[in-house]
Length: 314
Image (cartoon, rainbow, N blue to C red):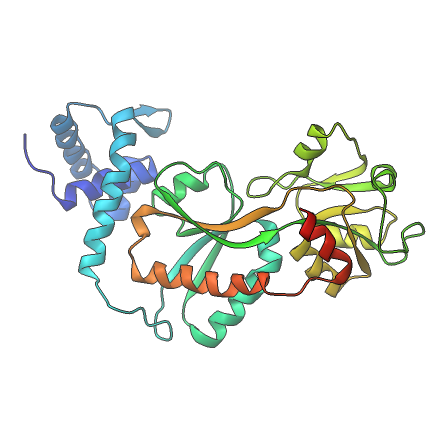
């Protein structure tokens, strides 16, 4: 048995990350036979195949899955030591971060981030991805640096920090023929035509709450994201139930009104999540601090008077 060094662990890490020996070899600027030879040595060290070829992918064994977070953290600490800096110079850095967000975060939060970067970190670049079922895996293997949304299903090995509290409101056209008083009853809510949003991962789903209450809405249309809901609602007699901080953005751009939801949907916390492998990196600490400072301002904004009671009740 021989001792594993950083080079060998890096090869294991990249095979796990890319699920491919050839892709790992390309990333490491090595030949495929050389990577295969080293993989065989690592396999002999652990007396385990570590990866099984299924189709075109190298699928990790159970032992490999247990090793990966340890290897990832070890390599991360070595990188921190090699590139140690007391401070992250935001004004000079050219680092690129990959952040996973929901569509609501795109509309509500990205403009604030972009404004901050333009003023304070003009050379820092962001790559934005959607939150999917692969997000936790991509965070663990280093493809994604940070995720922002509602992800209660994340496993051990992840840190989280609350950014702000979100709650639901109803949006309708200002010219809606039946909604004029900035209030609506539960009966009105259920009988009006709804634009329903199949929001995907990263959101709290109000459909679950309606199901628990044995309530059924009159759904006219179902759309795959929140991005177009404002345009649909402002030109029809339909209503939609959306997160409040999204409604603010939509209100500023369209012929809309905001109404308190007549059903007490639970509030939920929007958080930022990161893997333990990047917890101590000064650059990532800067990124998380920037997001926390920007987004915590959301909670400090005063709510419209007609929504205060709703927020207090939930």
